[in-house]
Image 1 (cartoon, one colour):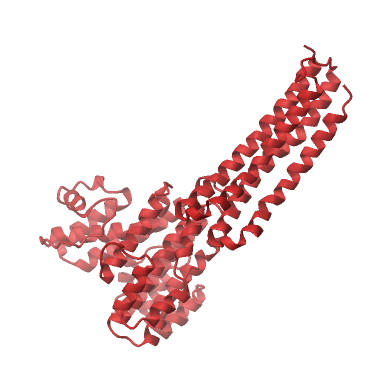
Image 2 (spheres, chains in turn brown, purple):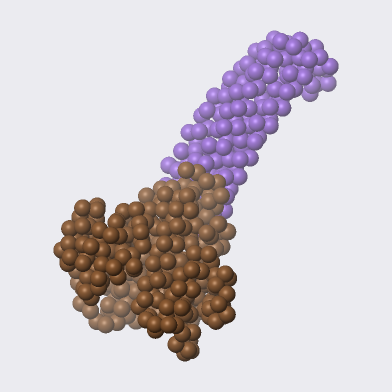
Length: 323
Length: 157
């Protein structure tokens, strides 16, 4: 598909893709002695702010900001990126509800760059003006706020908002009209459901609890997964194998970190064909995911170096790169 | 003024307009891609400019056929020929190949140039190969130009 309105943006991204980290750059990072060495290498590669010395968190936060600054400067329709932005929006909503219900003041709990700031969210919740929230948030915000206020059950509040977030992601994927985004949204919801099932099975939660936490999706049946999880870890793996997630089951059996890596690598494999798209929203979406994956991988290496993990332990967690 | 002259002028106009539109679309699309690359890497300006210019030739071909037509009917020399409607229609028919093929090939050459600019953005050393892809589209504009010129110059006036 050749959508003329993305010609400028995609060509610009092709130039930017030259600066994405390849496996070779990750090897250079791995070869650094310690976290400080990695940070100075990253600064040489243009990471963080060139004018000030930053610690790892500041540098990675700045890189995340740069992703959206770049995309916004291309003047494309930002609604196609809702799928990627909802988790931050809901995270802030969660933080705002807890901040109000527990009457505390904790600076720095909100993620920057969301459509509604933390202060605005607090004001909306205090004044019960839910209509000022995006439509997909209104009912969940009201329910989560009231539940937390009356029961003080933080987990219940989280479940309500996480489920609403997954439903919103799926809906935004469908609305985007782009196959790549729709598949990404479906996969995100499916993987979130699998994580809920595994975690709930380990903590001995009931099938009803799981069903309450999981969001419907195309690839996985919530009922079947919840019942499988109630039957034990092997039942989850058996169900996943029959649902077309056989590799996922294998990685789950291997280790939690192998499973996490598989989740991210699956996304990268899905977006790789976008490298050959000429003018559509797909390459933009893929670029954002590739940058996020790159930042996540650098974070893994930095924290591994900071905690002096053996190299082979860090390598196990390194994600596949887009380029 | 005879009906034949009206048809011949319509032919000249369609050659210039349609082929010019094709080039305008093509150069515009390729220009957007070129701007994207230069935003991030100004050193590639010269290479992407050449890519952007490739779809511009259809407009020149259209103009050339327009001039040949005007010369044929004597408009440029000041003594217009008395054309019968059939001759005028023949000239109009001769102008259509470059008009129509120029419009379509200009647009698609622009899209191919945009894709080729993507190659230059990532692998500057592959500029020569990248340029061949949009250049292939040019073949059909040249064939249309030849047909139009042959028809117009061989119509007896």
